[in-house]
Image: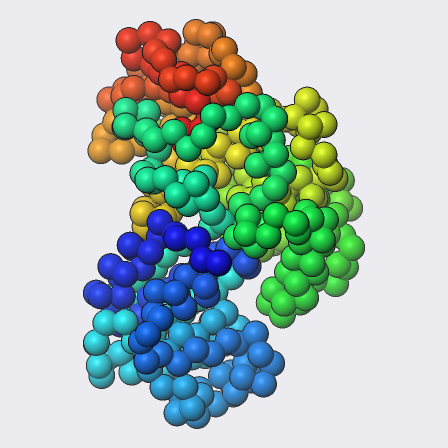
Length: 403
């Protein structure tokens, strides 16, 4: 079963304009399935560097590798053999025909760094995440912004939302409803540790690394405090920073940066940490019942994580660099806005509340945007309301089922 992906349009566009297309993202979000679906019926070779012998060939004899697997070709998990990239550069400089090389990888930042060094101007880049609610429900998808016309994907209650939070956005979990969370993520983490972590970096204590991921998961939706995490795990700050970089580059964790403007003083500079798959975050933080999670002390942070990750995925599916569009605000006086969407010189403030009737109190910090250099746009409170309605002339209540 194939679920139509919004990112298909961007993949098709890039393959018509670039000789190399790179799709990066966490394991099992559907990168290979997407490319195979989009290139179905075309005369392409497919090869995966997950296979140890093929990986060794790619590393030790790239020339022979390309004799055996000539373009057009799909190369899966390219991060295992960055030695191939200079050879691809030479080949595309000789022949700039679009759509010759499709590369996938599950180490986003490391892969992008190597691609940017070797294939600058020759490769179209896409970041891919798990399924959005639009993709799951088959509804039209547009990147969320409070002033846009929004499509309702369903009538959500606290029960249905936390069932979705618990279930995950991974394609296999959506397609196979009989597959348990414990079974899927137990296998997922083992694969992640064996294939990504051991092969790409020396982690000498896997039990501590697993504890590190879990300690990170329970802090989803919070400002990043690496020293606290390092202390809880029993590692030094340098190791914690290195391991966090692995989670970010693997596409498992997203760091939402604080707003920075020339006229704003005393801004807290730490990013906020979000797991991009709430099902994985639930599994790691030992929640095994969505109903109990929905009334727990962690429910607000998990709800916020769900909303933020959905919005990030919507922007990424359009090929938009989220780092230039999305931020959060918090100052030393404790004033905070969960999300700022910045576009074309306008800033749109967004609050996220696990409430059905948030009230105007949710807007109290929106006034800080008056001192921003950008124009203030329409604001929103995303919550568990059943209907969209105005809180005042400039701000809307938006049901979570519309993101």
